[in-house]
Length: 113
Length: 117
Image (tube, rainbow over all chains, first blue to last red; front, side):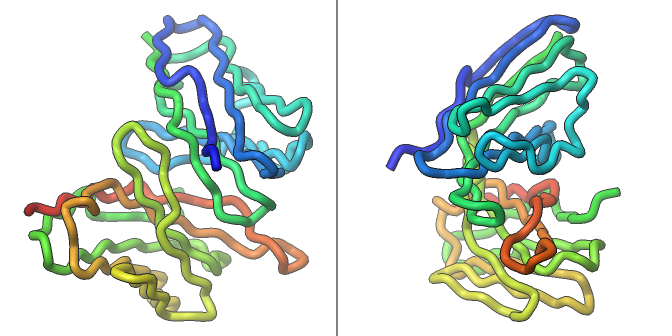
């Protein structure tokens, strides 16, 4: 069974630029999560989707971050414009159902200069 | 407000000995706890979990203990192996209204475990 796929694996941008990350969850997993992991901290949930609907985006900085899961499968997370403090690893995870075991992708490491 | 804390940034143990990783939480609503393991350049992988109705859960070499009164949980690895060297995260969650699923995970900051041959 293929795991959660993410791309790109690494990205370096300058502040005020925009960036987008892509995630393909495990086949059949209805719930998809985006996490931000800053160096030295644990992952922090940014947004949770159930199929193509948003369940929780309470910790998403909506002035600069956006995410979508249009067809209930793949998802993209966008930052526009990026700030220095956005430097982090962005992890995507999926689960069969809400509250189920979450399976994580390898993450995208973002560096904002 | 850090609701889940792992106060030891790192732990070093000898192969074959016991590794004990600790985690404290402040949110009284948490009733489900998980441990994840993370290797470099990989995403976290689920290791073991425990519900608040239990005080111990065991899976092979891994045992999680929960002390609800102290709001403390620990992960024991016996015997430790070099392949166990990784970052370990604990996470807490609470049962959602309806009682059939758990809400979002709140992670601690992680403990780096190094097991020496």
